[in-house]
Length: 93
Image (cartoon, helix red, strand yellow):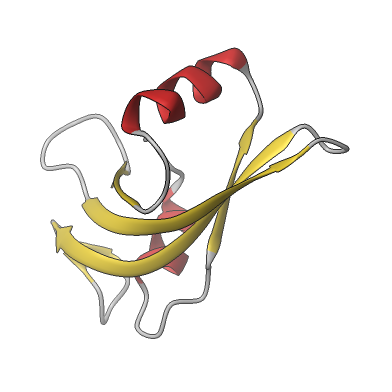
């Protein structure tokens, strides 16, 4: 899943400042989440397209469908791994 740098930094920060990621409840995301099965599952977050791309793997503990706002809430647990990112300075390596 691609994610903007600001939100990527908040998720992998020490301590973590963002605990929920939001996505539009579109057919695309419903199908993709259907392929991975029920939570918990690991989610790979990427920030950018050109190598070396900052990357993190986080545990999604649950997914909530908000029908009023037509959004999916991905509740984030532990950050399992981080690549090409300086967590103390909160910037790419």
